[in-house]
Length: 232
Figure 1 (spheres, helix red, strand yellow):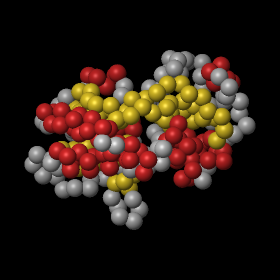
Figure 2 (cartoon, rainbow, N blue to C red):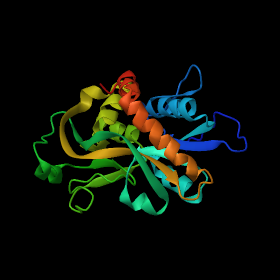
Figure 3 (cartoon, one colour):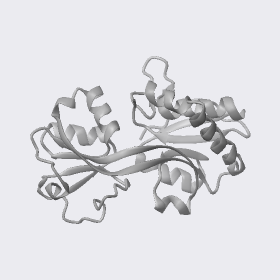
């Protein structure tokens, strides 16, 4: 598991955790600094609120544990109702399409076609919606990241990858595997939401971050961040 701390800890400093998946957040190989949608949003939070914020990157499956223990103050990630017992839900950043992307040549015209697929890679802990999660007939393989699922698909070990479709396609292009992708099926929309640990000593700062998100949407900053990170 990857743990990257970019700013020395100081009293009163907030800790934000985010998913280690480009283009949301990743480590720039040249500067060794976090880049992507979430680091750009956090930079705006610092500029607009004056708070000092350290960023750490983790696989998706690790984030809930960090928030539950209070080891991290806040995150910006897809909302899941099961997380309501450990975080306070904040402002919405954006909606993100969730679904299935099949291997090239594999038929995927509707939900019923999913039952014929020989393996669907899905992130462990990710709620897909659209009837996918509770369907025990689907042959699901739970992985820790999209890259693993894409490699499995390229080698014929699964016939589809499930999750945030723009992210999957972006990663496939970065890995040189996009030519393996075929039809896709939209299941739902994920809400990307600010969430802060109920055990955070900085929970009172959350309304400042909520206000910053609203202001960033109104002044066009959010749109600009998404566009600059391949979400046109």
